[in-house]
Image (cartoon, rainbow, N blue to C red; front, side, top):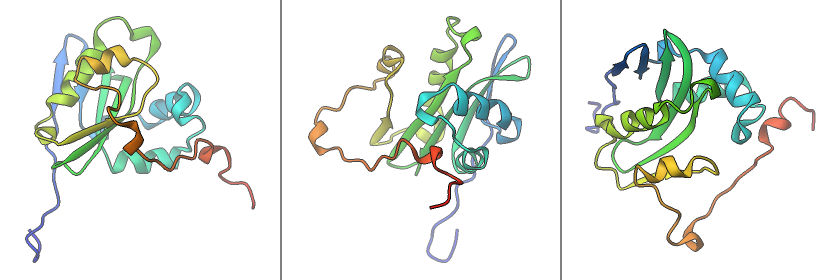
Length: 163
Protein backbone atom coordinates (compact mmCIF):
# COMPACT_ATOMS: atom_id res chain seq x y z
CA UNK A 1 0.00 0.00 0.00
CA UNK A 2 1.12 3.55 -0.62
CA UNK A 3 0.84 6.36 1.90
CA UNK A 4 -2.78 6.98 0.94
CA UNK A 5 -3.75 3.38 1.68
CA UNK A 6 -3.96 2.40 -1.99
CA UNK A 7 -2.09 -0.40 -3.69
CA UNK A 8 -1.45 -1.54 -7.24
CA UNK A 9 -3.31 -4.66 -8.20
CA UNK A 10 -1.15 -7.65 -8.98
CA UNK A 11 -3.03 -10.36 -10.80
CA UNK A 12 -2.30 -14.04 -10.40
CA UNK A 13 -1.79 -15.92 -13.67
CA UNK A 14 -4.61 -18.36 -14.27
CA UNK A 15 -4.48 -21.27 -16.72
CA UNK A 16 -7.19 -23.75 -17.62
CA UNK A 17 -6.85 -26.76 -19.90
CA UNK A 18 -9.22 -28.87 -22.01
CA UNK A 19 -7.32 -31.50 -23.92
CA UNK A 20 -4.96 -29.72 -26.31
CA UNK A 21 -6.56 -26.33 -25.59
CA UNK A 22 -5.40 -23.83 -22.97
CA UNK A 23 -6.75 -20.52 -21.75
CA UNK A 24 -4.13 -18.40 -20.00
CA UNK A 25 -3.99 -14.92 -18.49
CA UNK A 26 -0.19 -14.91 -18.81
CA UNK A 27 0.64 -11.87 -20.96
CA UNK A 28 4.00 -13.43 -21.81
CA UNK A 29 2.28 -16.28 -23.68
CA UNK A 30 0.35 -13.98 -26.01
CA UNK A 31 1.41 -13.93 -29.65
CA UNK A 32 1.10 -10.22 -30.36
CA UNK A 33 1.64 -10.64 -34.11
CA UNK A 34 -1.21 -13.16 -34.38
CA UNK A 35 -3.58 -11.04 -32.30
CA UNK A 36 -2.63 -8.02 -34.38
CA UNK A 37 -3.16 -9.86 -37.65
CA UNK A 38 -6.68 -10.83 -36.65
CA UNK A 39 -7.72 -7.50 -35.13
CA UNK A 40 -6.14 -5.30 -37.83
CA UNK A 41 -7.14 -7.39 -40.84
CA UNK A 42 -10.19 -9.47 -40.00
CA UNK A 43 -12.15 -7.64 -37.29
CA UNK A 44 -14.22 -4.68 -38.44
CA UNK A 45 -14.17 -3.08 -34.96
CA UNK A 46 -10.38 -2.63 -34.97
CA UNK A 47 -9.48 -2.50 -38.66
CA UNK A 48 -5.97 -1.15 -39.26
CA UNK A 49 -5.09 -0.89 -35.56
CA UNK A 50 -1.35 -0.21 -35.32
CA UNK A 51 0.61 -2.93 -33.53
CA UNK A 52 2.03 -0.39 -31.06
CA UNK A 53 -1.48 0.74 -30.11
CA UNK A 54 -2.54 -2.88 -29.66
CA UNK A 55 0.52 -3.61 -27.51
CA UNK A 56 -0.31 -0.71 -25.19
CA UNK A 57 -3.93 -1.85 -24.92
CA UNK A 58 -2.81 -5.37 -23.99
CA UNK A 59 -0.26 -4.10 -21.45
CA UNK A 60 -3.06 -2.22 -19.68
CA UNK A 61 -5.69 -4.96 -19.72
CA UNK A 62 -6.47 -8.34 -18.23
CA UNK A 63 -5.95 -10.68 -21.18
CA UNK A 64 -7.22 -14.17 -21.92
CA UNK A 65 -5.30 -16.02 -24.61
CA UNK A 66 -6.78 -19.18 -26.11
CA UNK A 67 -4.22 -21.65 -27.43
CA UNK A 68 -4.27 -24.93 -29.35
CA UNK A 69 -1.06 -26.89 -28.93
CA UNK A 70 0.58 -23.66 -27.67
CA UNK A 71 -0.47 -21.68 -30.77
CA UNK A 72 -2.74 -18.65 -30.29
CA UNK A 73 -6.22 -19.21 -31.74
CA UNK A 74 -8.35 -16.82 -29.71
CA UNK A 75 -8.31 -13.85 -27.42
CA UNK A 76 -10.38 -11.65 -25.12
CA UNK A 77 -9.41 -8.71 -22.98
CA UNK A 78 -10.90 -6.86 -20.07
CA UNK A 79 -10.46 -3.24 -19.08
CA UNK A 80 -11.52 -2.85 -15.45
CA UNK A 81 -11.04 -1.15 -12.10
CA UNK A 82 -11.75 -4.59 -10.55
CA UNK A 83 -14.26 -3.07 -8.16
CA UNK A 84 -17.20 -1.60 -10.06
CA UNK A 85 -16.95 -2.00 -13.83
CA UNK A 86 -15.44 -4.08 -16.64
CA UNK A 87 -15.36 -3.63 -20.40
CA UNK A 88 -15.12 -6.78 -22.50
CA UNK A 89 -13.45 -6.33 -25.86
CA UNK A 90 -11.51 -7.85 -28.72
CA UNK A 91 -13.08 -11.28 -28.33
CA UNK A 92 -12.37 -13.68 -31.16
CA UNK A 93 -11.79 -17.32 -32.06
CA UNK A 94 -10.10 -18.11 -35.37
CA UNK A 95 -12.67 -19.31 -37.87
CA UNK A 96 -11.21 -22.81 -38.28
CA UNK A 97 -11.70 -23.44 -34.53
CA UNK A 98 -15.28 -22.13 -34.25
CA UNK A 99 -18.16 -24.49 -33.58
CA UNK A 100 -16.33 -26.46 -30.88
CA UNK A 101 -17.65 -24.64 -27.80
CA UNK A 102 -14.44 -22.65 -27.40
CA UNK A 103 -16.12 -19.23 -27.33
CA UNK A 104 -18.44 -20.41 -24.56
CA UNK A 105 -15.47 -21.81 -22.63
CA UNK A 106 -13.48 -18.59 -23.12
CA UNK A 107 -16.41 -16.48 -21.93
CA UNK A 108 -16.94 -18.79 -18.94
CA UNK A 109 -13.32 -18.29 -17.89
CA UNK A 110 -13.54 -14.52 -18.35
CA UNK A 111 -16.73 -14.28 -16.30
CA UNK A 112 -15.36 -16.59 -13.58
CA UNK A 113 -12.11 -14.67 -13.04
CA UNK A 114 -11.82 -14.01 -9.28
CA UNK A 115 -10.99 -10.30 -9.71
CA UNK A 116 -14.10 -9.73 -11.84
CA UNK A 117 -16.70 -10.84 -9.31
CA UNK A 118 -19.28 -8.53 -7.75
CA UNK A 119 -18.96 -5.78 -10.35
CA UNK A 120 -21.84 -3.34 -10.71
CA UNK A 121 -21.58 -3.16 -14.50
CA UNK A 122 -20.13 -4.99 -17.47
CA UNK A 123 -19.93 -3.27 -20.85
CA UNK A 124 -19.73 -4.88 -24.27
CA UNK A 125 -20.10 -3.36 -27.72
CA UNK A 126 -20.90 -5.92 -30.39
CA UNK A 127 -22.88 -6.55 -33.52
CA UNK A 128 -21.91 -10.23 -33.71
CA UNK A 129 -22.40 -13.29 -31.50
CA UNK A 130 -25.14 -11.72 -29.41
CA UNK A 131 -26.42 -15.27 -28.80
CA UNK A 132 -23.16 -16.02 -26.95
CA UNK A 133 -23.12 -12.94 -24.76
CA UNK A 134 -26.80 -13.33 -23.82
CA UNK A 135 -25.88 -16.69 -22.24
CA UNK A 136 -23.67 -14.74 -19.84
CA UNK A 137 -26.27 -12.16 -18.85
CA UNK A 138 -25.54 -9.40 -21.36
CA UNK A 139 -28.62 -7.55 -22.61
CA UNK A 140 -29.40 -4.65 -24.89
CA UNK A 141 -29.33 -1.27 -23.17
CA UNK A 142 -32.56 -0.88 -21.19
CA UNK A 143 -32.32 2.92 -21.44
CA UNK A 144 -30.21 3.77 -24.49
CA UNK A 145 -31.17 7.42 -24.07
CA UNK A 146 -28.79 7.65 -21.08
CA UNK A 147 -25.84 6.15 -22.95
CA UNK A 148 -23.33 8.53 -24.52
CA UNK A 149 -20.11 7.92 -26.36
CA UNK A 150 -17.38 9.71 -28.21
CA UNK A 151 -16.50 7.38 -31.06
CA UNK A 152 -14.00 7.77 -33.88
CA UNK A 153 -14.29 4.65 -36.06
CA UNK A 154 -11.64 5.94 -38.47
CA UNK A 155 -8.97 6.73 -35.89
CA UNK A 156 -6.55 4.07 -37.20
CA UNK A 157 -7.04 5.06 -40.84
CA UNK A 158 -5.44 8.47 -40.37
CA UNK A 159 -2.46 7.69 -38.14
CA UNK A 160 0.78 8.77 -39.70
CA UNK A 161 -0.84 11.21 -42.12
CA UNK A 162 0.37 14.78 -41.95
CA UNK A 163 -2.25 17.31 -40.97
